[in-house]
Structures are given as structure tokens and as C-alpha cells.
Length: 284
Image 1: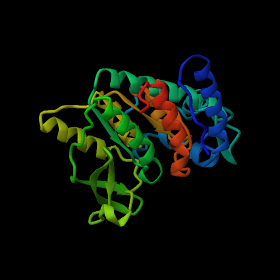
Image 2: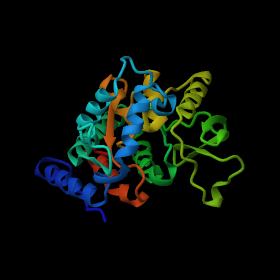
Image 3: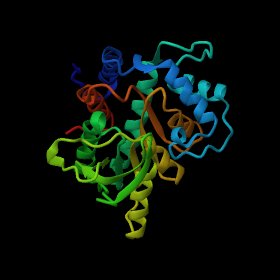
């Protein structure tokens, strides 16, 4: 479904960007997405109320009203700024997606140029492990150490079913959480979580071991907000109902956020991987 990207320079780069913009709409990564407007607005209200389930590790410097959160989401993500628009599918501006991808790629390229140690983690292993795995492969080939601290550690995470204990695992250099006792060979890709506890556990373990510490953290949900809150450079992906990452970017604790639907088919993210690696001069 994805196009083949060119060299990433000059007129070719502009053509690549336009092709990708059309692609993300066609794949429903942007444009009209599956996330509902009702869900997004509910999470904006919860964020403004300081609900930790939506803050996902971020401690905002300012008191954010619902209208202010909506305005940030309109500016950075492209959702409707009209508070009277309360139902139906939400929308992400594909132009915002491209701006986010370019900023994301620039930070990736800068880290690769200095051979920076990198920590990558996801709360969406079912959908995004391939995307992050492609980045991990390219960064490793460029000489960046891929950090894997706290491998096998147990993390207690609050869920809607109560507190559950998960194990921190790494696949292709990407951190994710697993149910205890689940083996990789069983084909279970990991659990979905928004919690910042996994990245805190990983960073604590790295510090206790005497380093190295990551110079860049890549991921989504709590991986980005939790790391950014602790002062680490963090970049990642976020859906229209993930206001914490965009507020973190507005307050300067998240370096780059790519707005997109984070729950489409995993293979639909492959063209994004190619685009980012081309722009970051990391194509293999």
C-alpha cells in the first residue's frame, strides 16, 4: 500500500512529502480516523482535571483548561477547534503529521550523527513494534547503542481490571510489557499500556547500573511523557486522544510528536519508517 520513497533531498523530498501526505489519508493514519470525537473530548477533560490515567507521566507546569487543551490539539494535531463539535469520527490534519514526522526524523538524525545511546519503548506493541524495530535497526547500524535496562523486571501497573504485574521485555531493541509466563514463541506481541512506570523502571535500572543513560527516548504514551518529565529528550507518536504528549511539546518537555492514528494495521506504518529514515539519512 505504501509508495517507494526517493533520495530525501531537493525536489525529490518535496515529492516524497506530498506522496506520504496522500498515503496517510488513504491509510486513515490521518484525515478522518477511527478515534471518536467523543473519546478525544473526554480525555481532554480528564487531562484538564489532572487525571493520572491521561497525564501518563507528565506533570504540567501550567493549569490547563479544557479549552486550552483543545486549542493545543487543534494547532498541533489538526482536530477541530470548535467545542460544539462533539460527535462523529475525529480528524488529524495530514499536514500536521508531516510536520511531526520531519521534526521526529531530524531528532533521530541528530542522535545518530553523535552515536547517542537510545532507549526505545512502546505501549502499542501490537501495532507499532515494526515501526520502532525499523528505527532500532537503523540506529544500531549507525553506531547508536540500543539500551535494554531492566530486562525481565516486574512492573505493577493499574488497569481497568485492577493492578496487574507485567514483565519488561525487549524485542529488536524495543521495550514492551508482557504478561508473566508468556513466551515470545507463543506469538503474543505484548500488552497495551499507557503507563509511565515502564520507562521509569528502565531509567532507574540504567542509573543504578551506572549508565549509560539514554540521550534520546523514542516511543509513545508513558514512554515519552515519563521520560520527558524526567528531563530526557523524548520523541514519539500520539493519537488525537493523547493530549499529554502535545501539551508536553507545548511546554518544552517533549521534543517532537507525530500526530496519527496509533491503532491501524501494523504494516501501514512501514512507509512512515522509510520516510523518517530517508530524511534522517539512515536508509540502509
